[in-house]
Image 1 (cartoon, one colour):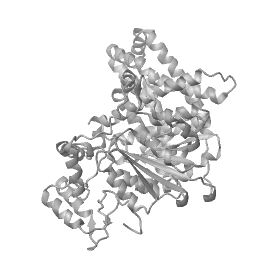
Image 2 (cartoon, helix red, strand yellow):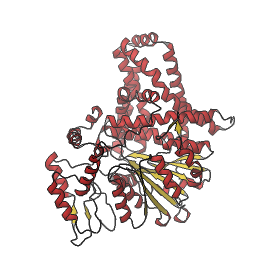
Image 3 (cartoon, one colour):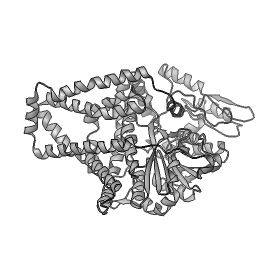
Image 4 (tube, one colour):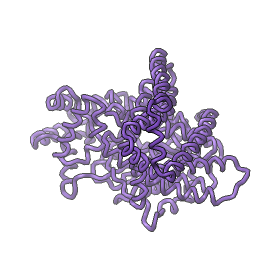
Length: 580
């Protein structure tokens, strides 16, 4: 504890530090030399790409591919491509005229309730709550509610620790059993006292001004919800987070700036979104009891509430400078689970929104026409792989070399758009990951839409369960608590740590990445240092410091050891995570 603060962000890999750096970086000029260098590489790649597409010496082979594949596969692909080009021209025009709404003065700000639902998040929920308390939003107008959704690990202990250290600024709700994120949010919204409700994921960290900025658009009484801007916090953990960061700038930021201009953002992300409580309360029971194909719908709660608000006449907009950093999967298996869950949700809500948009007659409403175009594109993106994948497989059989050349060339050309957007908005060097993702997505990601449509009835969350069961969970929690937040290697170390903690007024666990020291006020004034844990990790794993992973907490002891060995190898090259 330093200067009365619960947590300090001293770990160079911590998301909180990234958030603070982002806040200051947005106000500074980017490196001119770096920008010129990267932009030169991007511009130089254009003629190379055009060469593969237009000036290849073997155009006859390309013609053979086109004539050898059934036209019922080619015509829809060409039609969708033309429609996609028109759609992005519209989006670019809308995004060009987008402007962030300036935040109001302290006396003009509404009372705010921030809700943080958590399930099996451990210490990450305490870090998220700390970032909220460090916001520049007036404390007298800020209410924070942390909800433990029947977690099977030590999440509730971390919530209670944050509550005790917050000086009464955090309220805690403990659900008796896991009912899903939607039920946890509903329970908190029913007791919220704020005019505006902000939902924050338990592994997200807000920039200092995010809350103040996300409330700015509610000055328009027609606005029912506002989506925040989501960035990746763990970019240093491998290639996959880096690729997701660049694609988020395109899929989330660029797309939502255009959708915001027509007041119809299709998804308010769970990591950071704000809602007018008077707009949401009448819809809570419908939202909570939503079903799909006769079964309870427990995924896509963010898209579901957004669809309900739009269908009830509320505006849903986007605030680009309200930024939250959130953790992303670092393994191929993890990212597939996440994308499958998102895609299933998209299929469900696109169907609901399409029936609404095309079942309502508004001939002279241009914003409604733009909403329809958004939905046409969204549905086309889901259906296209059904045509594109068979065509690609057939072309590989006929002419594998030419097919690979054209596929890679087309992917590089398509990746120019997200690369340019990210380079212009953020960092020109990291923009190159857009080209890596473009190639990577063809063999490893393109199948997800097809699989998700065939399994759309499945509502499993897939990324929030513990590996241990029964008594093993209890033993793991007891071991974690006894070791002061770090699993010990033997019983003697457990006993010694219990003696060190004995006599303290509050039994607190040291949080990796939340500061060099946490002081426990007791009779002995015991001071526990994270240094000894770092030294133990250096002894076991060379010079590498231990990193607590969101996913490693759910593994058994044997699996955890194997994962640590793999993580060590991954640090040799960030590209190694692509094939994990």
